[in-house]
Image 1 (tube, each protein chain N blue to C red):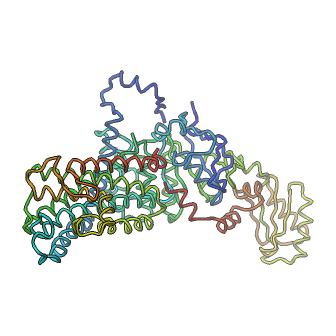
Image 2: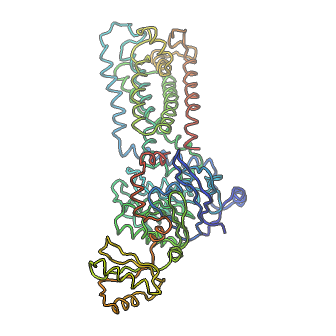
Image 3: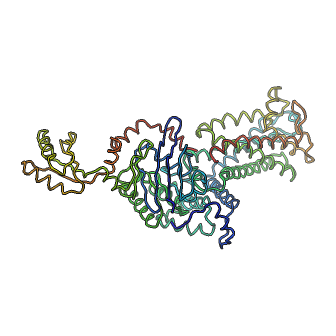
Amino acid sequence: MAPAVLIEQLQKRYGAIEAVKDVSLQVESGEIFGLLGPNGAGKTTTLRCLCTLTEPDSGRIEVSGVSAIEHPRLARQHLGYVAQEVALDKVLTGRELLELQAALYHLPRQTIKPRIVEILTLLGLDEWADKKSGTYSGGLKKRLDLAAGLLHQPDVLILDEPTVGLDIESRVAVWNFLRELRSQGTTVLITSHYLEEVDALADRVAIIDRGIVIAAGTPSELKDQVGGDRVTLRIREFSPVEEAEQAKVLLEALPLVQEVIINRAQGNSLNLVVAPQSEALITIQNALQQAGLPTFGIAQARPSLDDVYLNATGRTLLDAEIAAAGSRDLKAEKKQNMR
Amino acid sequence: MSRTITPPQSEFKDQVGAIALPKSTPLSDFIQETLALTRRLFIQLQRRPSTLAAGIIQPLMWLVLFGALFQNAPQGLFGDSASYGQFLGAGIIVFTAFGGALNAGLPVMFDREFGFLNRLLVAPLASRFSIVMASAIFITTLSLIQTAAIVVMSAFLGSGLPNALGLALVGLIVLMLVLAVTALSLGLAFALPGHIELIAVIFVTNLPLLFASTALVPLSFMPKWLQVVATLNPLSYAIEPIRYVYLHSDWNLGSVVVQAPWGAVTMGTSLLILLGFNVVAFLAIQPLLKRTLA
């Protein structure tokens, strides 16, 4: 069976800016696939190429085995697209928008009404269906947008930053809904710059940075590639440097400890990389006790996707966000997104 | 999903296999999407009727107020027209239809800016020409409603009524003008960067084209250079035939409707010029539409 989405060596430049340099990814049928990266990394451009809104400069794109470049119309039938910015006609009611959507996807006339009722119920929009979408809250708008994307039962649902700007309750509702969709067999491709979102939702992840896929796999595969678990240790709430240095030497001698860094910004706490899923906490605490040092706090965690990103790019996702925010040309981006 | 891919060759099999559901054809798909897009525009109008109200009140005000400006002008000053009000009617019909059509691109521009157009473009439309088609149907309907209002009002103000065939011709002329101008406006909506620029173009086009036509005064009032400009203006070829059928119930395609600096222009020539205007407009916007809607 053909993969739900296949992208190979995608390239797209806007003038001097290479928005996508080399993106290849494969989304298998029935999984949630996360495209993770800082703002401006090329996620949206990749999705726009996939959704046939933008023509790539080169590369291959297939949706359920149909080339989106050679047969865009056919590919569109397999896709549901929920853009980052909810674009509703505020004068239309939810039901009217879905009726329009149904006609645009040429659903057989006799199936339209029951299908709309079904999808409205599925997204809990029943009581809002006949109110103008201009009166909806942000969460409701997103739900209507989701309903519109799902109305024609696409093989692949594509969501660009589905929870940006949503409150926590709506965000969790969207997450649960996407999981529910997956369990029914729909393939879901999301982009996000929220680590925890991708970590919580995605079966597989591709991390994209400056137009290039820098890592791909299941979240735990990626974390395992980075190596050991992370341990944060505080000897005291604010430890003197000497004591931290002493503990560092002491801990580096332990066989399960791979690396020790003193974090001066955090009251000379110690950041350790230890053998994955080891009994590090007890070993470390015993070692400190024997040396007569107290323990204020200690925590062990598996590496996060941020560690994966850090490992591949030498900067954290947050740093990349901040750097990107300074260098973005929002006006030019808006122009690219306008057709 | 268990749904299988439908490569182009297997569609044929589906058609042969005569399934219970009526098989959609590209034409029925096109009609379905065009009607749905048109319906959206009419729902908008119904929920925000102020534009239609203003669009009807404004030309009526023109008719009453502007018509009164030259109330006391000597008889016979405006050609065969009995009064200036009667002379003005045709100009107001055309100017109103022109103004409405010129604005046709604005909703499309807003759809572009708000991202609603993307919603249409990711859908498997039979042809994206349905987006243009829906706007054209909408604007044409509005213009015909406005025209009817002006015709009724003029009759009340004593300008009389053309006969049935004459009214049909008025409708046809309005239709031709509106289609061409709507096409140009939609072309601009896809070519210009934003609504500010589109509104600027509408501003600099609207009134100058009115003044450089025979809407408000006959050609004979104008200096030579303006006569030349006015006879290059397609609006004049919509105005003069309408004015003619208001005054002559016995018109035919050979009737001379206006004396241009370069000779007599007949009803038939005027209609051909309007047709030519349509052809030019639609050819001109082809590349713009292709770029976005290909």
